[in-house]
Length: 387
Image 1 (cartoon, helix red, strand yellow):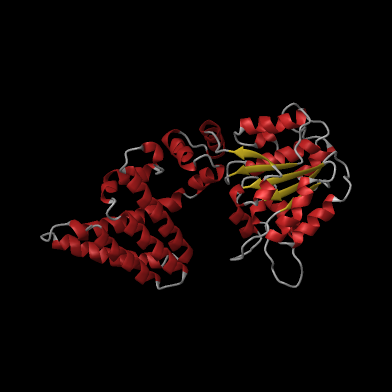
Image 2 (cartoon, rainbow, N blue to C red):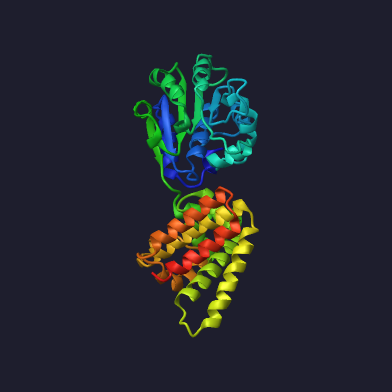
């Protein structure tokens, strides 16, 4: 990863470059930003720049032996620490046990998140953590002399995932690291870090990617233009990961929207159509039963995604009533439906709608009969439209 590969973040790039040019490299730097904004790629580009033996004004050269080693993430003076899980309890597990997986995962994939990393190492339901044993490994590695570089870089991704014992073990060495050591901590939730760690680091805040840079990157990667591009950039909220998710899940989201509309229209028809329109009400009830059966067949994970998406749609429709477009995050097709639907999501039913959708998602997670869950949700929606 080079500075030139980082999307936007020109101000942060300049700050990092300036620290090197002026010889003010902090011994412990905390790069803090939400997932998808570029905090990890920025830190990687900075580590490469520190090691490069033929730096240019604004980036690493890409040609020296150091850069070639960094391409494969095998530079001997850069050490990585990251959350892992324990496949079994027969040994002490540390980051180096997953180093091969880490390198394979990272190369060509500098924008990623915690869950995608855990999925790549097949962690299942296990929570990733930087275990207590890692503290001894870090201290051992930092006592080695540098092999090739002027600097020894200790790269810790998601230090907020450190076991308390490991975090406390690092306090002394963070305050007085061996000569030439640079700690690079990359955090997505720095408020979860120990205050004693925060006080020993220099923090650089990474904000969301500016719309212009994000738009150019989306156009280059996905060839989006016009209103679709505007919607993508707006919904991404400064995150490259969310922009990619918007493009790649458009077909899936279209299905979720179609099912949401079907359920809401059916429930509203039964709740609000006059009694003389008995035939329409009967048809709607029959379709809601069929809808529940069809939704039960899409599988647990898809059902959970649908219900999560439905919560977002209900929330966004409520916000739409405030008539402040900048607060709204609806895709174009969602917007078309919501312009007419939003008035029916109001202060009388919004909380109850959210509670029912959350409960349905919880029941699906617990393997409750999906057909009954969705039918119950549809019937509850009828009652809520009467509020």
